[in-house]
Length: 341
Image (tube, rainbow, N blue to C red; front, side):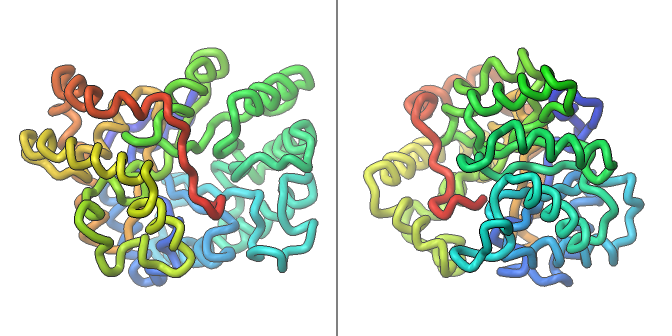
């Protein structure tokens, strides 16, 4: 396991990290979470990703209990939370229980620390932009949490480059803590925002990244080429949008065709489509860490071995891959329809 700097900060995080979206509490209980986190620690992973909206806060509770049982020193790992959607789903949330106002940003931080049983959050993300709150107010809220020692690094997830620049510039002009990182979707099929829209941010602002969905919600595993397998994410209640997106849209068919064309490359390298897709992400130097997810031990163990594929991705191999994926460079990304990742 190698460790990469989180943007221009001094924090070094493992190139592979582990997240709990969808799985923790939904498919993974505390006992299984403990086993998974133990495997991650043994592999050298030091960053674990979470959010207030994941399973209405229950995901953070499961992760907190598992970390507590493992008894690793707090200074040996990093945890994150995200704020925006709120813990209470849908219309049941009161106006002050969601968004990026100073009130919700502050209270959500305290609640996340309590659920995960930690005294501070290493990374704290604005889970999406909030059109109803001035960016300046959110920057102030994050700065206050940093100065209070409750957050070490703050960042965003799926903000536009324009919004990020506004946050950076306001923070700089007012001597406040600037954002350190962005958590965008990035994979072989979703590239435009990461590679094109954010291009100048890596050099001009030292932006770090903690990328999510490196397997495009499982599409890049090739498991959807024939049919939707039982027990996969596309069969879960609340994820009907994924099944529709994969099988019933023209864009979905184009993505599956690309995966089918990539399979021979994986086979020539003696690896799986899953590991090829994961390793491909890590070749990009602007990826600080890639967040893995799994609902089964064997999935996690296979994903961790993707590092073995990195030396195989020579320029010739990358050129072959690019000849198949070139059309996806400028295609807009497709975050989860429910807005929560």
